[in-house]
Length: 93
Image (tube, rainbow, N blue to C red; front, side, top):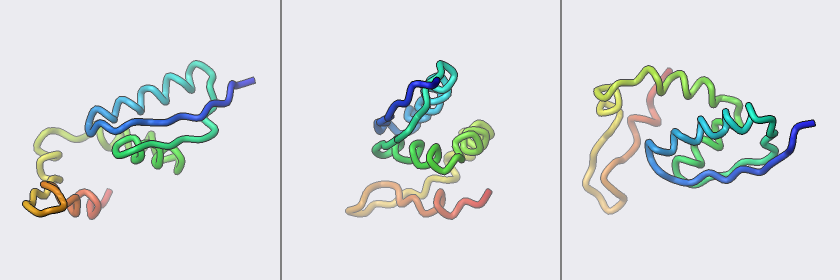
């Protein structure tokens, strides 16, 4: 029988991608993730996991190079931050 756990993921930008490896290892070790939550990048990974889209996301991220990533960033100087995020949300697979 698998041991059921709840998992909370932290923020961390691109370093938050390490959460994918943690999830994979937990499952490999026989844990069953019953609930998952996160903040910032951790929330993205948690949401993808909850939608059963984590593997698809991982495969897409592994295809990106530095130029691809730079093209997804839409810099702005506003009171809301330095990056708008519109390009990444409009990205089609």
